[in-house]
Length: 168
Image (cartoon, rainbow, N blue to C red):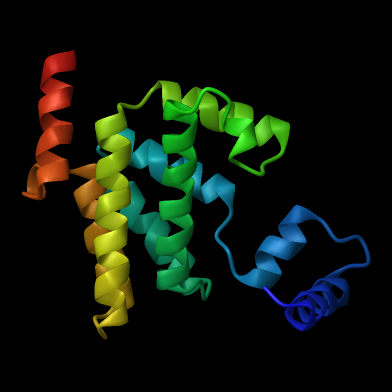
């Protein structure tokens, strides 16, 4: 955003370590980080609601803002969507080459309908968070819907389920 905000963030990072790394910046900003995004994706793919809820609880207990987590996860699924649909995703995504390769590999293992369903679920959860709903509960409900699409009666969930049946 602004230069003043960037300098403030840099001060926070330098106060943690003189060697500013991606991990230091991620912690200073309060992001969960890509490792957690990949773990949540694995939970979704394996329909592992328990592990996904446990991860959300761990992040909540470590003072991660649930709205920010929801935004971060939606952005992660956006990256998957771009990798799934764009001829050259590197033109649209600003990511280190190794991370882009990992996201491309994950995108290859997901249907576009599953990715779009996830973005839709997360966007709806984020909207409800703005209306004053309990952020943790909204995030947990979103994670449950991602791990168990049969519980979500929205059109994107139904499309995802139909695609899974067709693939089977």
